[in-house]
Length: 103
Image 1 (cartoon, one colour):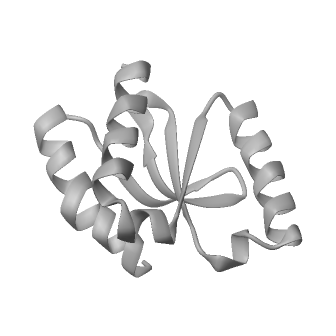
Image 2: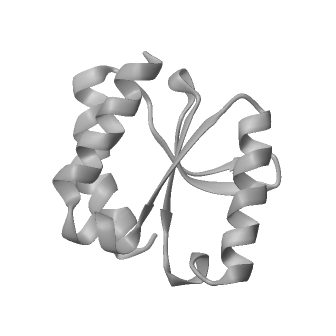
C-alpha cells in the first residue's frame, strides 16, 4: 500500500468499520482490476490515485476502468494522493457523505 492508502486505512477505515459495522476490503480484486478499497454492503469503490493516473494514458485507463466497474453496479469515487495527504479530513468527510447516500 502507498503512504496515502496506509493513512486512510489506519487513520480512518479501521475505526469506520467498528463504528458503522460495515466491512471495508483493501486491495480487492473486482473483475480484472484490483481496487484500493471496497465496501461490499454499499457497492462503493474508493480509489487513491498517484501520479501515473494524471497523464493522458492514465486518465483514459481510469475512465474505462470506472465505466466497467459502474457497469457492475458499483459507485467509484477517486481521490489523489495529494488530497489524502493534505486534505485528509475533507477526504474522510466525502467518503462518509457517499456512504450515507448509499446506506
